[in-house]
Amino acid sequence: MTGKRIRRLGSVVAVLAMAGAGAAVPAMTAGATTTGAPTPISDAQMHPSYTTIGGGATVLPTTRTVAHWWGSTTNPTNGVTYGYNMVGANPNTCSGAACDVTVRADITPINVVVDGQTFSGSDVVAPTLASPVFALNNYGSTAHATDSTGGKGPGGTLSQGDQGVPLQLEDATMRAQFNKTGAASPYHLRLQPTVLPAITIDVPPNQGTLLASPRGIVFADVNITWWSSQIQNLEQSANPTHLPIYLTNGVMNYEGHNPLNCCVIGFHGTRATGNGGGSTNANGNAKVQTFAWASWVQPGTFNPGSTWALQDIQALSHEISEWADDPFVNNAVQPWLTPTAPQYGCSGYLETGDPVVGIGFTMGTNTYDQNQYADGSYHPEDEVFLPWYMRQNPNTTSEPTQSVSSYGGRYTLMGDLNPFQGFRQPATGC
Image 1 (cartoon, rainbow, N blue to C red):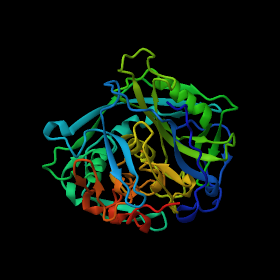
Image 2: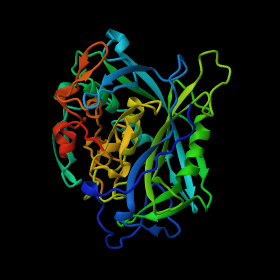
Image 3: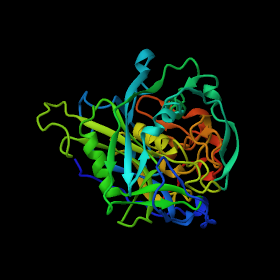
Image 4: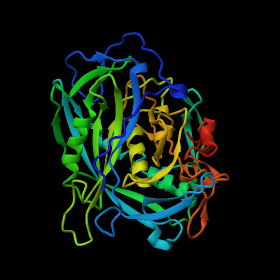
């Protein structure tokens, strides 16, 4: 097993580059009481990103982890066969009721106190439960999607394959990824939410501060090293067959001991025997605990002109999708690079949300966010499919048992609604 790994992220530039700081506006606090004077931060300094914690957990012959399957694909550009673990049932071999998997999601709201202000994770539990992450929606179409500038554009057809089939977001994503769409398809990956008691974390003055975006949205900015240790302490008492979700509101992380080196909005990870968790005498049935942290993002935190979709549940949708496609944080792929997410550099990870940070669409009705930047919808992130990483062109993944392709030959959930050419063809190398 490897030790803890935190993947450092760079700046967002190129297609989704942030605009400069705007005029001063009255401060609005994301889920917090408003006292004190936060430090202003410009859009150019706000680098939305995600990371992984832990990783390298070898999948054990155990029943003490989330339901998962193993597959492999040969990449035609380098001849390497890549193996991977994913949550749910094997879409190539399952049949009937065995294709329908439910994982319990244990949601722990965290109320975070920084500089005397409380950012209430409890406040966003109800809107999160009502969001596409857990509620059922029709993924046949969407009203709006990210345009070529990163702003809000018109929507259209999302997935006619599941037109009229009520689904949770990750269920719709996995079904489209493996072309298991349609009312007759038995394939599902469902999340069953359970809300656990809220906890409060007081952030020491030397580990967190308050920042304000150019639109006056105040948020908590916490040292990622300190924050990740708090989350790892919590997940040690979690059930390994469940997905623990640690939910915050308006809380982000900074890296490199510099509060202006912001903003990580979520991470997912794993802990296994030999990696600081589990039993040392497990008799071949050791625990492998997966987990995720994500923060609710108030509209207007990030520039709506260049990262319009980066609000409300986008961070949570990102982390859940990556958990499902890489639950043990050890799925390697041929390194990829994309101008829409240069903060990840030359990445060799199968992290389905990283290439499409800030790209998304509207789904469902969001009545919680009411400021002038809100549009009354939730904003799931687009997600990249396995064939993109495996350089499959045409879009077909060669599995040990059969060939499968994603719905409509697309490389992301949004398909042609994703306006960037790099996602209408396989990944490019670096």
